[in-house]
Length: 141
Length: 296
Image (cartoon, rainbow over all chains, first blue to last red; front, side, top):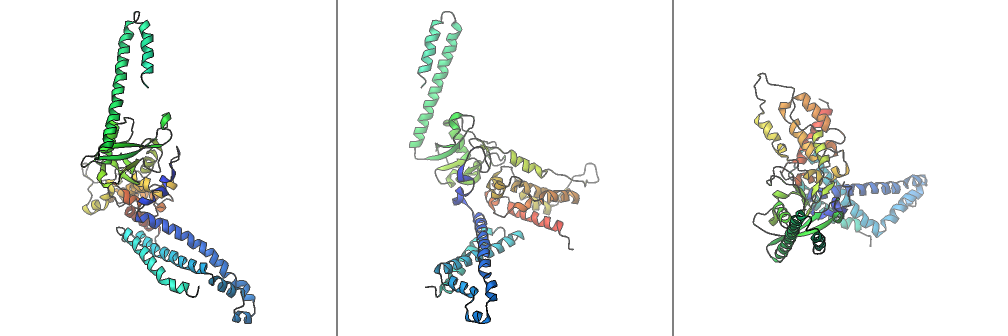
């Protein structure tokens, strides 16, 4: 890094318009990775309501009156959560597809087509996300 | 600006003119110099005006910075209008600007034919070799900046010392313990092996890859694409023998060696000699794994 003066964003994200496919793939992979880690914590937080719920009586569980079921039901009732779930799917699918691409790169397969495989994983992510919308949004309104 | 000061010297020297005739000649020379400087300035201004009005000119925005000159300590961009000629490269345009408008414009160049690797610059947001980049391929105005992620010494000149250190860290020269029998016997390389390392031998040490690599920017210990490519060139050379290859692998499989590469492909995209850098780094990663995992 240059220390003699501040060259501003030119040293990193300021040149985003000139980023090539591989660079975008790297940025998206980092971003989706952090999102997935963030999701992991909320996932654990929601699932851990199952611990107090297990202490509830069998009748309560059968009737769906325990903490766990109540938490899930109330969360799924929110439109925002439904939308976030679509986003989560998009993030996870891209991370998987690009991860596969990186695996192949590590094996030295298809390095000449790395940009095409990135575009392919983007398009596939888009298609899968769009296809999932009816499932996730159903009954939210 | 230049009228006031010479007049004063004229007056003062007139009184001593009788006693010191030598100063008269000096004065005349100073006057001549002043006139020449004025003419030069005028000509530069005229040229600049003419070029700006002309339609077939290229607009260059060039990064200017010089820590030793007071007026240039704050980085700025200077605009030059350079008459376009067919086949003009960014380096040609810069040289025209330097020779015609501002002789203090500083940049490195030598062979002008993409062999010496001294003029890697940041042109329109990408690391390019200025002598190999056609003006006609670029959008105007052409922004020319020094390489990012490097200390700027002056204008377009960056400090390459760190880059050279990294290159030298991989011992970029042929070493072997296996000598042929005869005294005058050559160390022949077979065709397949030559073909394998062919692309990696093309490196001209321009530093474009190192500048484009985000990982190298954040980690000064990372060898960088150019140095790893150099290591590849020798590690894959079969004439060096097994024990030297082992030594080379020990250098490149360190924490800040090949493992820092995150396959951004930035280096491969910018390399002016089209070296498949990422491919070489990945192959060395696999070599390093094979070297350490011994299940078979």
